[in-house]
Length: 271
Image 1 (spheres, rainbow, N blue to C red):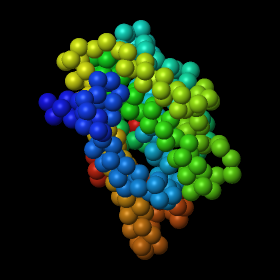
Image 2 (cartoon, helix red, strand yellow):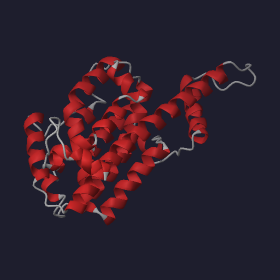
Image 3 (tube, one colour):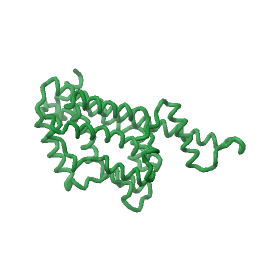
Image 4 (cartoon, rainbow, N blue to C red):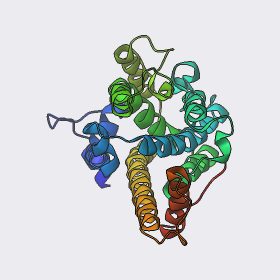
């Protein structure tokens, strides 16, 4: 199995036995792919827009809602219990605050996510029912990624969007974690203590690779959705006054999103 082989060596070429090291090695190339999607490059260049951020929040909410529902349900499972830190890591309530800030009190009716996001959520719910030990792969890649880059991305978002306060940025803050570095060490130690058979460990490594693949698909679908929506709105601007949409940019962009959803085969999901 290629994933297992690549995971057995650390950066110096030596065999690594810790699960955290093996996941890092197995997902190295996939991590690079995720960082080089158009949406993430916009982040790295400090060019994230409000529309990009809002649709990203919608997808993150769907993903974390599924992940945390399954972690809660399997909290006593021997593979989940060691890495179950709801007070320190849970993101759903933070995302709900951010979505309410940007969309208003009826934000649940306005959430739009692409098909890739729905597939990601469905996968999380499936493994929660059938193979809870695989949740370890998703929890590790998501939460430690958030802790590693969350503060930086939060500052980039605040500066790019010109936000004067931290309202709308709750997702990036972990009030229950006083030291991200120390907490990550604790998390890795707990995860490395999980007892897995060789078959189960191989499955976790494969799932970690799939977790990054899901993220890449979500980022790509979001960018396609936004591109089609923008193009559709621009086309309506060029029409004659009699055939044009109402002049409100919000109305035009909303209609554009609906067209985008149909065009690339994604769904509007009222959560």
